[in-house]
Image (cartoon, rainbow, N blue to C red; front, top):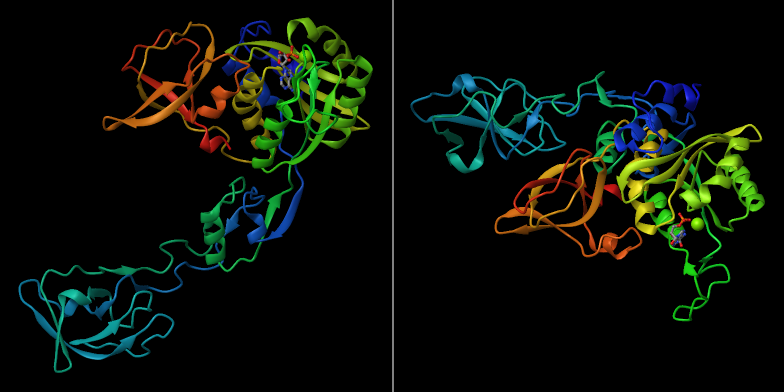
Amino acid sequence: MSTLADIISCISDYDPDALPVARAKEVIRSFVTPISGVETLSLRSSLDRVLAEDIVSPINVPAHDNSAMDGYAVRAADLASDKPVALLEIGVALAGKEFNAEVGAGQCVRIMTGAVMPRGTDTVVIQEVTAAEGGHITIPPGQEHGQNRRLAGEDLRKGGSALRAGTLIRPAELGMIASLGIAEVSVRRRLRVAFFSTGDELRSIDDGGRPAGEQLGAGEVYDSNRYTLHGVLTRLGCEIIDMGVVRDDPVLLEAAFRKAAQLADAVITSGGVSVGEADYTKQMMAKLGEVVFWKIAMRPGRPMAFGRIQADGNNAYLFGLPGNPVAVMVTFYHFVRSALLFMMGRADTEPPLFPVKAQMDLRKRPGRTEYQRGILEHRNGEWTVRLTGAQGSGILRSMSEANCFVVLGHEQGNVKAGDPVDVMLMDGLV
Ligand code: AMP
Ligand code: MG
């Protein structure tokens, strides 16, 4: 296992006090490793889990050549390209009930969608273009050899790789696996993630918090970060360990970090990494493991701690996020999420960015990455984006109103209304 110091020494122009987003992601990605635990689940319970092994198709899907339409199964060799042809109807093939005889020259079989192609036939003519008279079916010219026929194995070929390890099992995969006749799948165990909020000013609604509407004491705020983290981690499918609020007290904090390291694969904290507070956190982390403190060239966000801590022989990756509620969500989505997905064994971890037209001018300083909160909407025949209101890092409403991030890259400067900007949909992010 390489150390964080090793990894950092390989990063060119590493500056912890002005670290570009791409560099921070690079360090995180190089340091975290996927969990190895695997479990076998019944197909339905594997929804939203990550495949631990490739699935090799034990059969051809479909198993037989079959019809894609209702109509007549014919021999293309019998048809003429310039005039109608009359064929003798000798039987019917239904889905699940094959026509079990050879079809000879000049003959055809009525066939339903999904029915196995009768021996000798290779083409299906849809019912609507045919005419039946006295036991004969008239087929118009212009049919193509092999039309309206599904070939055995055209969806999945026997012995071929149907799904790769690292694939997220979504509804489509459930159906695909079922179509192979497989009832149990091997998936990675759930990732265990512990999290807590730090801060003397925090009140918790579920731990001596005051009923809604009652006044907070001077300087107090309700702890909201633990709720957003509960939400994102639950939706990511993690096994969550909510450790509550921990006061800004080195002894209590150290105990909390030790417990988290014992219990979890990853630990996420909020608060306590900003300039004023980082000093004692740094001293404590030096005792617990290897943790670096960064000022990332981004907005919102900036301060963040990352590393690995140990307790009782168990290791946990640590993500020390800033305290401001929007900064927590932004750093979670843009750093922690993909790291956790990678730890879960997912092959794909980066959500797509795509350009749309900015509805308004956007102010942006080159030299940092910005994640502004946007509303993607269809206007005058095209997709456009505008910002939600105030973009302060404490204004959680800007996240709630948004349906996308407007991602303004490190080098990007001001944006003019009408210019394209990259957006990242929040829906796909959970
Ligand atoms: P810190 O990073 O600890 O200096 O916190 C930065 C700001 O975020 C302060 O205004 C804190 O009160 C606020 N904050 C920290 N933790 C939370 C939390 N769990 N819920 C809501 N606000 C918080
Ligand atoms: Mg604090």
